[in-house]
Image (tube, one colour):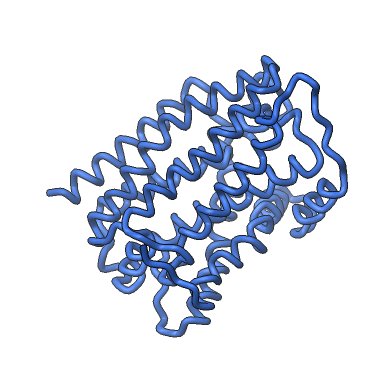
Length: 308
């Protein structure tokens, strides 16, 4: 196992911890700007988290320890995944061969505890959202793993830090049709994992159409803050996963690499999500599996191209 403890390798984790909620603020500002509205301040997500942390949580007598453990385990899994995720050619805090498999399964672990916490309430609405989340994750996880396997084959490294270091240092020389397919597949997974349009609408309040939001209806106070903060962290690290493919930063100056990576990590996913949510509505539920199957097919095609 290879571990990095330098100030360069810790910067991806520090950036994720402090800047991840800002992603939601930038997305909301972009949507408001495109709609001709002023919108909420960029720092509104931080205010919301602080407000939730100052409240007390209310627990139903029908729930068990699983309901209380769900937000904590979910946040812990995402924080651990952030330690494995590099920022461009800046290595991750923890890196070892095959860490991309652990990365995918940490995301799955956080989702699993969110699902069972929703089922623990005994609510039919939350059970409905949990079943949808489990169904869609069963389609998105293979697409993510196969896409990362294709990147590993392309770069000759089976570590996320090694993959993105090769992609960055190789600039656009490594661009191929397979990498384009990988990007499309991971982008679909990105929207699915973060419950964004066209898969889910984070602003809806209709229980019959919600997926992620309906699973956390009974959470409040610090528990809901942990869930929302974990969602921001997940969007940040999956955004970095995308940015590492399309924006191979390698200036030779470490502080400049860090600055560019942070700016692109904030602006890239935020602009993409903002434009999508402004320009289209969510898909009908029966269309979402078709979208995820397409992502899986793109990943399989990319891997076949790299194995040739």
